[in-house]
Image (cartoon, rainbow over all chains, first blue to last red; front, side, top):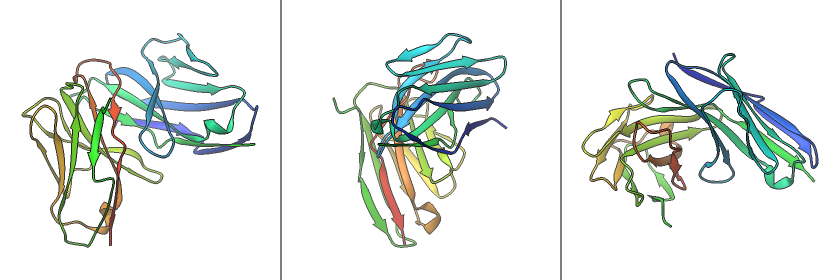
Length: 112
Length: 114
């Protein structure tokens, strides 16, 4: 059965800290891995990763994929209170149902 | 830039009542999805429609039906609501099922069944 596991489930840090969020997966026919940030409403897209070892970066956020070890990490440096959210990892597969498989998310709280 | 629009945003139902969640996208996407999100469970796929005229079950289809009315609209119906269906429902779309494009979400519909 395909699955995506995120860790930790929740995390509390102080502003300025660096955090690393983990996403491991076991799926057939992997196509891509996506990271989303979810505040109060709809998840918003952060990164899509398809190739191993190539870092995607946007400001203080960066992410990398390891297709051999089947995981991805999302790093946030110099955290701010606005980074407080649930971070979701999803894997896009080319299996018969063409669906995204989501992890349960990591709830990040950044304290001032 | 409407994107994916869901209605209603909030609804309280009594057990046994029926209702339909409406979803429309204006991005000319072929594929549309309905997810539910529960605490500690992440997003789980209820039904999806790879293209106009087709629908398929996802992980948790029991108690739900869907209609892909046209390319823009994909509705989710609860025929006889149960408390276990209390959840946040998200409609989503993406250009097609083959591309690696990201998926676009609506704002969510908060449903409480009492």
